[in-house]
Length: 121
Image 1 (cartoon, rainbow, N blue to C red):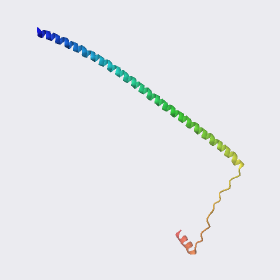
Image 2 (image 1 turned 45 degrees about the vertical axis):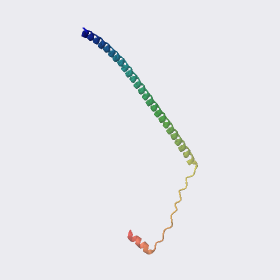
Image 3 (image 1 turned 180 degrees about the horizontal axis):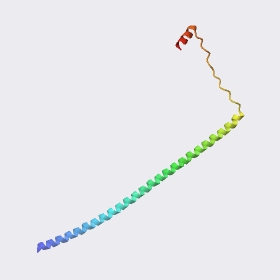
Image 4 (image 1 turned 90 degrees about the vertical axis):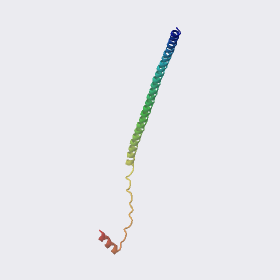
């Protein structure tokens, strides 16, 4: 009977070990689920941060474009005012004198040089 009792004892030990392994498996499964949930939450936070950064970049670009447009408008207004002021002043001023072009005196060629020049043409 000792073999039967040994088998019975061994069976109970194995059943207890099986319950222990199943409990460990359950704990591991719960930990895995918690880690997966944490990973999803971290990914969602990361995506939200990336979206916020993209929105901030877009806002900065819009702001830069608005500043550039305002600067261009100011430049156009300044140019228009300068044209207007220039037009008023040109009526007041006399016509500018044309620039004086100074030409060097003609070079006197000897008769031989004049002949050579004609021959080259």
